Image (cartoon, rainbow, N blue to C red):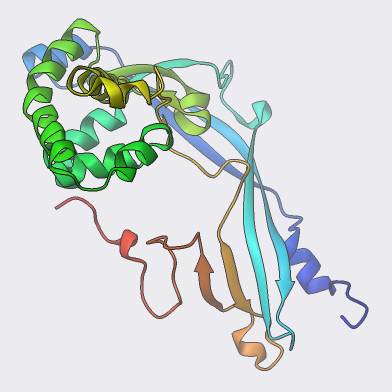
Length: 275
């Protein structure tokens, strides 16, 4: 509006008054040994719903000078609602579930390539803030590539021993809250990073001195949208054509992100990763 305030339509869109819920049912696996050792069908029981009230807002960043476009960032917040959840259910309930990373690594060609090719593993290591700047800062030197290749050659045997010895299996215990929102620490991530640090220390003590003794691994969860700000969207306000009100023109994640879109094509990352 002329005084800078939002009209009723925009106000209700930015801060919706409706109440919505998202409910989850979790399966607890009860015979992991039979599944792993005998190839038995999994026995599991379902528990739920674990109900969450969803508060959604559209945080307005601003308008174009002519008022024809609006820039905003969506935000979602999930709040556990005991009244609409199953009796005696609690987000701290513990379940035995398939380890997401274990099965994605086994089934997804792209993930496996990241661990079995020099370029793929180097990109993975470079993506870690604590170690990436050091390794990537050295450039593509024969010594670094040779070290990564030897790391790949030795990892399969090492991983098999480590996974068995340290009880890293296809199933993992986690709470409902960690599985859905907070995230759990995946043992396979820890194995890869631990192996990389020890291998670098053996191959290049000077490089190892520049690295931290431990590196935090990414959390694994199913819903990463809780209490987070989304990308910046650009949409039409309908000022020049009321039929196009709310039409999204683009969204922006970050500079050079493969998820950015200018509205004329799907982001590259939307296509299937597994072939």
